[in-house]
Length: 246
Image (cartoon, rainbow, N blue to C red; front, side):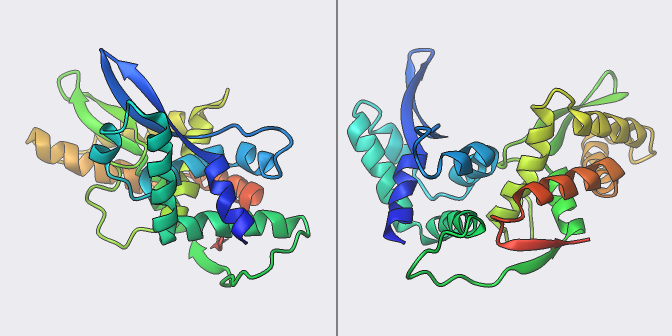
């Protein structure tokens, strides 16, 4: 169990990048050496792991910025943050435990909770939020969109957040967007085109807000979205702590 916890130091790294003469601390999921026992785990789940790293792990950006001139101290800050954030470490260790268990590798001294059920409707509602309609363009005849990585999508989310469910939903959307056949982006365009013709309001800000809700509602029931979720779940069900109920 301790070996698994220590492995997070191999998976998650931090580096310094420069942009317009300013230095920034950037967290990322490392590639790992091909001989590492978690190499396949990381390669198969990079999007999911990166989402947890960027959205769930509790870090202080100001503290990281103060350390950009000392890479050693910067990485020490990251590892200390991981050790202190029990919710994050529990999420990661659950994933690794499931991955190893699927290969009949037993982990001692680990108390794992039984998998729970989550509806596909909930996952679809989370996935839809990663398409973030942000601005009316062309005299209000079209709407631009950002593929969000978490912050905008859930800024006004009222329910208690489950980062693993969000991470899985994110991997569905971003996995499709980065593929040779970005089918879900095309489905977004289709639903947005339908929503833009709805008589929602003459006030631009009100109309934009209502269109966001309308597009998300349409995407939640979109057949291609549902199919993509099912396919991704079949690929990742062995490592996830939940079962999607159709």
